[in-house]
Every structure is written in C-alpha cells, then in structure tokens.
Amino acid sequence: MRILALLLLPLVVSCSLFEDGAEESAIARVENKYLFHSDIQGIVPVETSKEDSVLIINNYIKNWIKDNLILHKAELNLAENQKDVQKQLEDYRRSLIVYSYEKELIKQRLDTMVSKEEIQEFYESNSQQFDLKDDIVKVRYLKVNKKAAPQVKKIRRIYKSKKPEDVEKLKELAHQYAEKFHLSDNQWILFDELKKEVPINVIQAKGYLKNIKNIEVEDSLSFYFVYIKGYKLKNDISPLSFEAHNIKNIIINKRKLSLINKIRSDLYEEAFMSKDIEIYDNKNDEE
Image 1 (cartoon, rainbow, N blue to C red):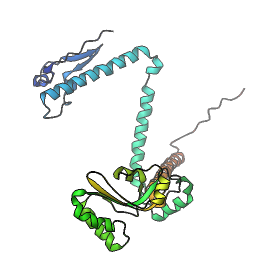
Image 2 (spheres, one colour; image 1 turned 45 degrees about the horizontal axis):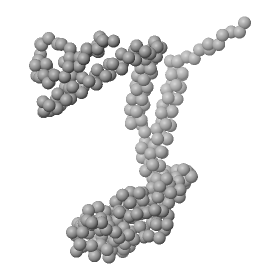
Image 3 (cartoon, one colour; image 1 turned 180 degrees about the vertical axis):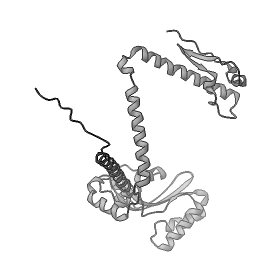
Image 4 (cartoon, rainbow, N blue to C red; image 1 turned 90 degrees about the vertical axis):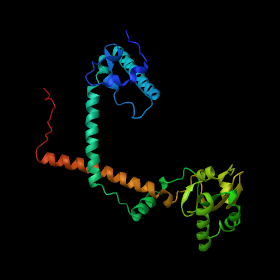
C-alpha cells in the first residue's frame, strides 16, 4: 500500500491557498483519495493567530489521513457483506425521519401539565419504587468568612431558631455576609452534597444524623453553621417532595408513549379503512 506522506508546511495557512481562480492542488493523499485546499476552508476561526492556525490545520490533515487509512484497511479486510452498509444507512434514514415526525407531533399534541394530585396518586400507587439510594436531609447551612466576625455571634444565636422573625433575620445576614448558604429547610437535599460544602467527618450516617442536629465547625478561613431539621436514610421510603420532579417526568414519558402508540394505531386504521394498505395471504397451498 503506497501512501503519500504528510507535509507540514507553515505556508499551509497562507492566504494564497484560497485565492479565487488559483489552480487547485492536493495537500495530502491516501491511496487514491486526495485532500484539497478547498476541503480545509473555514476550519480556522476568524482572528486565530498564525501559529494556532498552523496547528489547527495540521491536526485536521493528520486526522483526515488517519481516518482514511483505517477506512482503506477496513475495505481491504472486511468481507463484501460486511461492507454493504446500504441497508443500515436506509434503516437509519427511516428511523431519523420517523423520529423527527413523531417528535413534531409530540410537541404539538402532548399535554405536559401534571397536577399535584396526579403526582400524589402515582406516588401512593408506586411507593415501592421509591426506596432511597442515598441519605437525604432537610437542612440550613451557612459558610461565613472569618473576616465577618462581628456578625458571627448574631448568626450563631439564630441559625437554628424556628421563630419566623429569626429566620427572616438569618436570611438577611446570609445575603450580606455568607459566602455560601442554603436556608430552604423544607427542601430535601443529598447528605453527600452537604458534606461537600461543610468540613465534617462522618463515618456512619445513621448514628451521626440521629444524634447530631446542630453543627458548628471552622477551617482556616471560614465558620460553618449547620442546622439539621430532618433526615431519611438510604433504603427508607423516599419522600414525595424529593421524588415529585422524577414522577412528573415519568408521567409525561408514559403519556408520550401512549400518544405515539395512538398515532400509529389511528394511522393504521385510517389507511386500512381507505384501502391504502393491503395484507396478502402468502401461504403456499399444500399439495
């Protein structure tokens, strides 16, 4: 197998390569396939430096050669039936067309509104499907830079308070002085996500969450305040509020499948009634 070597010339990005009317010449060859200057037009973004342009174009040429080398090798070594991809291409084309059409019909016809009642009903009917895969918590936490020391005492005093006025004050302090915070203590979050934010060492989540409700730790730069309002452990039944988004998606996907099946069935019935389709009996008569 003869292969023309790749020539990496800085002049490959010269403007003269793309002049109108210039006689086109090849810049690389693999067997009987050629790469021309016109094939690499537009691959370099505008305002790219000359050095980066050379790198981009040379990488493109190398990849073109590698792709065609493996293609040539495949054509030499595969059996004819293995190289006959026309049926696969046609099947793929048909699948793409059908997918695009069904996608457009779904966009036009699918009802994506899911009520709280539907979510509740699905949850209650399928609760066995909602075992927790991870520990989750309802929590408030704040990360406060030590430079905000004058405010730390106020935060320490109210971060675990249940009084509405203290909760509002905590929000105000968080927005002013906290580097990071999460105050939506009615929202479930993964315990692992909390551990990423707060430097706590937990060996066994069950014992830790059962006994620890308030956490105050620090590192060299920041104070961390955590109030754990509630928790559920791995393999417990997952709460509805934690699963609501997933349930909504499940319901919509079920509707989508039902709609596609209905569209196909209706199309079949219409075509059958209008005699646009026929089914032939191809059984051979037995002698």
